[in-house]
Length: 103
Image (cartoon, rainbow, N blue to C red):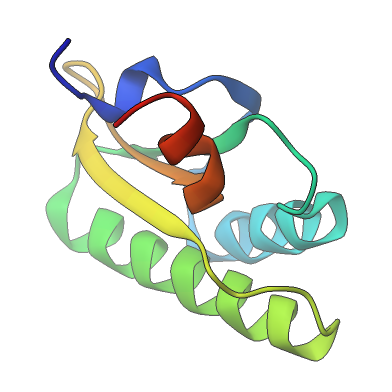
């Protein structure tokens, strides 16, 4: 079976349209945490390249910072891909989940 991030089980999907919403989504993801979770999180971003880059940077750095502040494990894998004609997506997941799925 060929791997694609869209096949990872998702606990919650966040549809983010700006950097403020990206920060809020990252805070929510940190609160929910990655430990003892068999699913990942998906963040949908608009296909406007410059905005998507800023949102992606905000999400990834805010999650890493939040996990460090709350003393949670910061070992998180993520992939960015074309979700559909209107969105890019970031899938974030604990690497143990990827290993359990056999990828």
